[in-house]
Amino acid sequence: MSIRRTSGLVGILSLSLVLAGCGSSSEDGGSEASEKNSTRVFAADNGKITIPADPKRVVATGYAVPALIEADAPLVGISSWKRGEPMMSKEDLAEYKKLTKVAGEQAAETNYEAIAEAEPDLIVIGVPAPVLGDIDVERLESIAPVVAIGPSLPSAWRDLSRKQADAAGATEEFDAGQKAYEAKAAELKTKYADVLSQLQLGHVGAYGEVAKGNFHREFGGSWGTNIAQDVGATYYGKVKKAGPGSAAVSEYPSIEELPDAFAEADALTYSVNADGSVSEAVQYVLDSKLWKNLPAVKAGKTFPLRYTEAATYGSAMNTLDAIDTSFAPLLKR
Image (tube, rainbow, N blue to C red; front, side, top):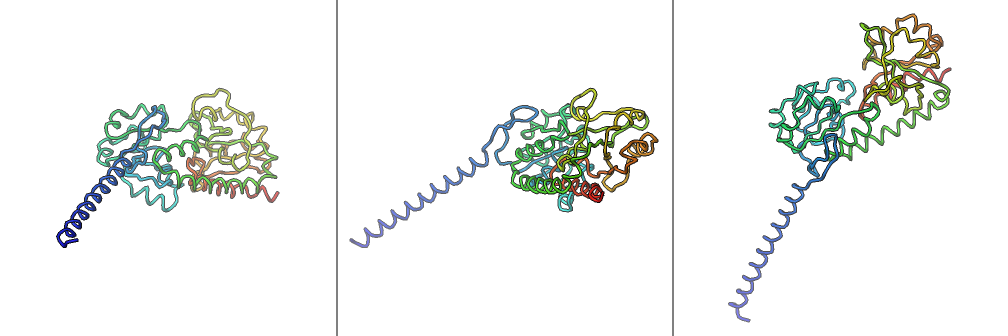
């Protein structure tokens, strides 16, 4: 073989390798583009929405804010969520404060320009269905796909937060948080099994209206009761006239109805603020002579509960700690 022919073959082989390399690069680029543009259909409160299979820039509002911060979703903007700040871990609170606020506490305080500037590829709205009317969803849809995943029954926060994390492609951290919560709840359920199994409980919630002379009674599945139920607490009774959402598991009787409401209660719990202080609505009940004459109160079986508004597994870990602290005297009796 001549040197000339050998050089020619080398040139041909080199060219082939270059072309092969170009083909490989093109295929990789196509694969990356395909992955970037892949979508899926997601069932939300506002219908079946086509969303990115793997969102990279997510805006969250309402109840979706704490859920997606805990799930380590790729957030680029959130609404204000001051009510949840006392229940956030130091790391989550730091992240919450750092993130750009694109909406206020109310749905009507949505800043559409700020959302557009955040350049999201997905918007997760975590507000109740009746409040969705305060948001211009069509305007948001012109920015990015919108999924509305709002609360219904208070106890439904478990499924709600799971759906929010799923939409944002952040289920790994979410599942880890759920597992930790369930393990702790099971541990406390075993710890208090002997005492709680003997008790029928009633609960005074935080939203009574002093000016109207009523109090807030919460039954099983409500904000003040649902996490205590995971520990084994049993709340008896049901609302007289069920309504939508929280109205299915709580009601507002007049203060004169306290004896009838809790006459059968072996023990009573009541919501307090995150710092342990008592709200005006609850203090109104505690100051009543009718309260002081209840059998459970006379027996010294009243227990304040903090963090009753928890709506994520991370924040509910605080609630479990508070329940454990509050119920601890039961083990000494």
